[in-house]
Length: 224
Ligand SMILES: Nc1ncnc2c1ncn2[C@@H]1O[C@H](COP(=O)(O)OP(=O)(O)O)[C@@H](O)[C@H]1O
Ligand SMILES: [Mg+2]
Image (cartoon, helix red, strand yellow):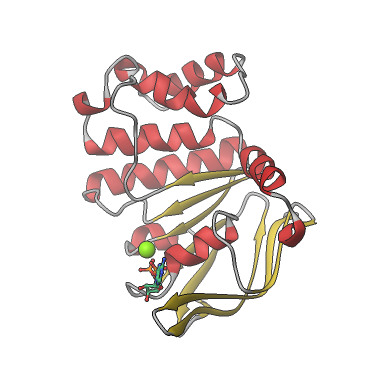
């Protein structure tokens, strides 16, 4: 088994809902290991997005412990959190959020502009070539298909070599053919770069890709 990159222990997450406190995650325990693929299914409203946001340190939690690369992030400053997120974690959301005024290649490179890491230009070109998107590299988001946009968003999420890639319902608005392409893409990222992938999905094919499969139900994670 691979090394643990992210580990949640008895994680509790609540939301304040008017006068009431809504418990969304109740004592979640999960380990995200190097090179694994974790799929999480669950009904709408079960807390899948919340879980991904908490595990990826985008969102705060109420109780329990979250370790990222051996660091208990409880006492991390915002700056430290940003830095560990930048170096270890990638995200893909259901809606790809490509920037309309930048072309495909620029969108992929965007995360590298923060660190002025111009070495990545070469990597972007390799990714575009390897994943068959070279011919659209100078097109703008409104000139490409939904499936292409999603693949561009995925390449953007891995340009900084994250150790873990979180994908929240990545197949949400894709048809069957593009969902299958998405599986291929995730599998080759996982095999070629060793990136661990944690995804939520309603699509049984995508859920089956997981080396670890979970269902989020009654605020708890069950192994499937
Ligand atoms: N920011 C928020 N404030 C209050 N309640 C929220 C917030 N975000 C999500 N919720 C509630 O938390 C529960 C889980 O939501 P979510 O994580 O989006 O579920 P899923 O992704 O499985 O559909 C839902 O009941 C939702 O209404
Ligand atoms: Mg959701």
